[in-house]
Length: 90
Image (tube, rainbow, N blue to C red; front, side, top):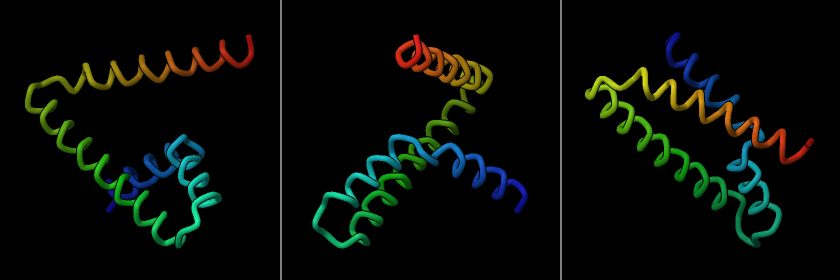
């Protein structure tokens, strides 16, 4: 249960306010369909994307590349953060 909560909180916090949530909010504000349709479509997309992530992570672990995955993700996030700072404030 502890690992479930750890993963849930990490993904939940990471998803708050990101472009996926903003896109879903945009669809909810502009599309003349049931909000349940929008919720189910966006939730299904997130489940599929997460499933791909789980399978890719498993494949990477089988190759012994976990260290490189973590390093690459860290560098990418730092790079994106720096890019956003430069674009928006400098």
